[in-house]
Length: 307
Length: 171
Image (cartoon, rainbow over all chains, first blue to last red):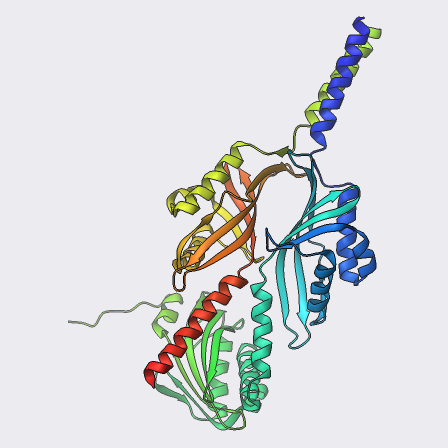
């Protein structure tokens, strides 16, 4: 009798343990199913992808109330993929299987989706969460969460580019190259984007009146800050002019304006108005930034005038 | 001998039972903090909201970049500035906590955000997912997933309407 009791107790304990352990897991056939689903999506194997869903499966993307069918979901994916030269989730993904209080099996997925747009070669990165309910080896419900506005903004930019007059496209292109030339101290590139007598005014004062003077000024920054970098924060074009908000960073490890290196880092925010000619070449830059801020970051101090 | 064997067997089960401690919870102190966090957000009680984060907490909302709680708060306030009302509803709201393979505690939240845009009284419904790691009752990592496309579309519509109005005034 004792024996039976003990065995009974052991079985009960064993079962209780099993039950607890099963509610969370990072492996299992249901996880393999969802892994297969994503592999099919990446390969574009829609037949195999489709087979993983139950016929009546409901798909909710950024929605709670209005579901779409698996076929509609596939059509949506195909339409998006048609705009891309490459797409997929990298290896940095997380899967878990949970059993909810009402006994349903859910696979939760978190991953980084990356896609490159054919139209402008721009790469979009989207964090994506999927929560997928699996029943009898088939997906019966899928809920997806991600920020679609990121893709929509990129598509709108492409649309705006299409409607843009040719000269504006050239200006925009040259404008991007100019910022690149600034960051890389590429004098040849800079010269190909500007007229010979390009002007630079800094806080209202003439700093350069031709390409050589401009290049020398650019070089001064790269000598003082070998890691000098210019980042475009935002800009817009209007009537042949670009209005650019920029951020410059660098470490002062070289001589700068006849002063020894300070070893200090700078981060300067500024604003430039670039004027372009009818060929899309830059004729003038009017740059505005806080010089005092830059010198303060380098450790210079201001001495008050003697009374 | 038999007794010893049985005792050993029982001990093994106890040990394996200990190893198989629950890893899924639909209630826990961390979930309670998460609920208080959502409540603070709904009420705009930013002091309480901030108090749930560890000083070094890293937050990523719809991005892989990491921000501090203060930076995210600034962004949220910006988003909410144009609303006349907002908050998570009681409908479609789920909390769970799991203990992952690294023994980290993560609270997963699924909810429905509802807001009204002040400028045109338009109502928006946005499903939101948060996955949040807790250490000693404080949030150390937070990832949020929600679609802002409808929100952005409304803002754009309002902006273009304003531009048209401005042009009309100028003319």
